[in-house]
Length: 116
Image (tube, rainbow, N blue to C red; front, top):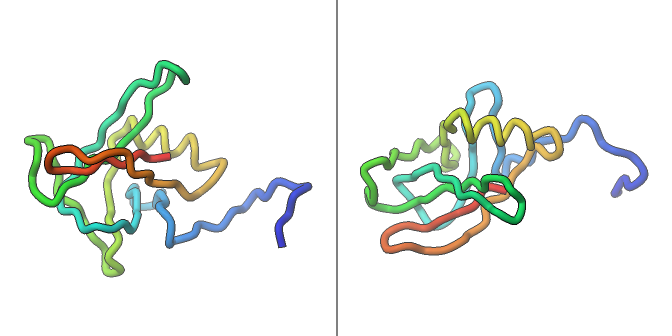
């Protein structure tokens, strides 16, 4: 049943969707295809006057700043976020404990996903 008239205060985290584990400080998600390396990136959006945050992921080490993914026992990716991205996630977690990863584009040897 959908509650429309009231704001739900204690929302449950859906572990099948991307979420932030506050205790361990990891952004946790499951996504296809399989990636081994990632970069955290941002881009300024002049329409909203805010930064948008991205994960650039690839199978091979495509940049000297790449980090290797950690995976848990359930096959989910675990990313330790930078302070700037962690602050963005913590500010938005009050509204919804889950996030979305939207595919943006493919570059030469990697894919770009936006964190929403």
